[in-house]
Image (cartoon, rainbow, N blue to C red; front, side, top):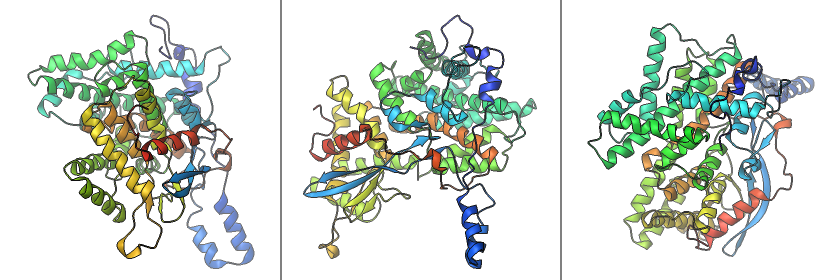
Length: 529
């Protein structure tokens, strides 16, 4: 059921002062200053060289209140005859909303966006307005309005589906990112011609600026979803007219709005090329919501850097961050995995295993390892990002319940992915000249889970990065709001102690990680259990 408005009623976000009092609320900034304390101590003990080194960093605020993802769970796991200790990371948004809540479905996208943007959980205003419902309605109307189905709260113009259709007809088979970037520049040029472009800086009214950023982002999202739908239609009938393409794309959003469902269901429907049901919607929503904020990722660093420079307009803010997200370090890993598995499909079993071992040894294994955590090693202790397991967990549930059938073609590729897991992590790899040493093992990262889920759901390869963009865009907005209050450009900085999540003894994430590991290690994998 739709989280926001009921058709025919006045949206709650239009109540007097709601947008100003909620969207204009900036989160608290961190007063945690570990470098300042270290500098004072260096002076106290007369360490001049240390004092000089620390001075080069203290001009910028020294901590963040958005995200912390320390090792949160430690437990044993069996890899053949070897017992490994997994140190699993976990995150919390602003120390207020834990990823466990997302996995248990106690929190969804609106909760995560609200906490990340405003620094608190939604409540009820003095006028009795449900803040969560009102914010959900605001997001829905901005998205459906971008599709031309209602008035947009921002007042921005809707997406021109006819123009998008003509673009897709000229460039068939393009990924959604190309259409998004092309029309982002079109909208920037149109607003500049009207004299309406304003920069991102701390002099802007916070509510007005956030409204503008949401409008730009959701305009991009609608454009990307439209391009996905149009390409599917053209693949089925390359003679389809631009007008029919435009109507087909608009129809995705219209059917979801008519059913009083959240706008994100239209995104999921575009990805799977049918009106999404509750089951597939849950799989994609968990995966997307978890990806909303990843504070040290390169795209987030670009978003912060552009904000620190007082970027001249919001269009460039999203274009720059999106281009970083499209790079080989991010989206490229998913595409690399597709290419690698396609290569493996053409090999014999023995040659396939050798190719995987070679990739592990030489650091060329896509979707495995991590540059900032100890996800590779020869000891009996490794760190792991739990997101791959979290993404696949509802997929396993759907397969086991008989509510999702994986095609034979996808199952073949998933079995290869499973074999990669067994070689890279369960068995490990030994070099001929280090045969007496423990094997080198790698743990999978977030992209492994994203690849597996979308392969099982039959999402075309060129569309497999769109979901991340949809949700990560809200994470960039969270970064921008913090960056306007305190300049944090560095990708990894100490979080304020109060936002660091503790292990509260909740078994949800450990159980999911262990189940994921056992299914892939014992061979059952993606077959119904």
